[in-house]
Amino acid sequence: AVENPFKKASTHEFSGHKKKVHSVAWNCTGRKLASGSVDQNARIWLVENTSSSKENKSDLELKGHTDSVDQLCWDPINENQLATASADRTMRIWDTRSGKCSQTVSTQGENINISWSPDGQHIAVGSRDDIISFIDTRKYKVINQVNFSFEVNEIAWNKAGDEFFLTTGLGTIEVMKYPSAKMERSLLAHTAGCYCITFSPNGEYFAAGSADALVSIWDSKEKICLNTLTRLDWPVRTLSFSHDGKYIASASEDLRIDIADVVSGECVHEIQCRSAMNSVAWSPTAPLLAYAGDDREGVDGQGRYTREGIIRIFGF
Image 1 (cartoon, one colour):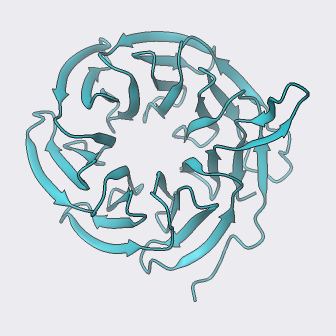
Image 2: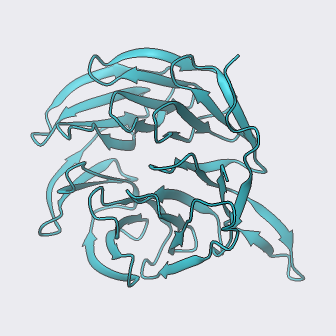
C-alpha cells in the first residue's frame, strides 16, 4: 500500500462568503488564496503555512461583478493580479493588494471558465454558449473568438503555452495549436462529457474528469492515457495536482475528496465532505489543499442558512 503522508493533517475553515463558492485558486507564491462565489464577490485570503495560523482572515473582498463569479485564475507571473469570470458577461482583473478592479473586458456570453497562459500574455474565457474569447493582457482586448458547435467545459494551456486544451460534452479533449487556434488533435478521452482538466506543475501530465465518474491521467507530450482512477461514483467536477506532482485530488458529488498517487493511481487519503464539491486546488508551494462546495449548515429564524460558502484548507 502507498504511504499516507496526510494521516495527521487537519482542516481549517474560512468563512466570509454569503452563498456557495464555485472556485478556489492559489497565487503563484502560495501566500494568497482566491475564492469566487454565487454571492457575486471574490475574496482573497492570506494563508500562512503554519499550524498556529488558525486566525487566517479574509484579507479582501473584491466587489464589482453583478452576477455569480464562476471561475477565477491568477496571473502566473504577477502574484498580486487575479482574473475573474462571471455570469454578468464580463471578465475582470483585480489588484489584490488594493482590492480594486483594474480592468473589465466585456464578452458575448455568461462566463463559466477562465485560464491564463503560462507567459501571462493571454487569458482565455469560456462562456455558457461555448464561445472561447482570447484576451491580450497588454491591451485587455479580445483578439480572437472561437465559436464551437458542441459543449465546451474547462480549458487550459499546456506549460509551454503552444497548445490549448478544451474539454467537451462529447467526452473528447480537443487540442488546438496556439496562437494559431488551429485544431490539432481530438482525444477520445471518456464515454460521457468531460468537465475538467488540469496540468501537473512541471507539465509532464494532464488529467481530465468526466461525467462517467472517471479521472484519466495523460502524458502531455505523447497524448497517451497512462492511468484511470475509478473510485468516485459521480461526475467528476474538479481536479488538482499537488505542488510536487506526486498526488492528484479529485472530487464530485461523492461526499469525499480522493487523493491518489499519480503514478500508481492508488488512493493515498480521502477527505470526508458534507456536500458536493465544486473546486479543489493544491497550493503551488506546500501540501495544502483548498476546497469548497455546496455546503449549507445551520438555519436562522427566517429559514436562511447561516453557514454557506465555507472554504476549507486541508493539510495543516
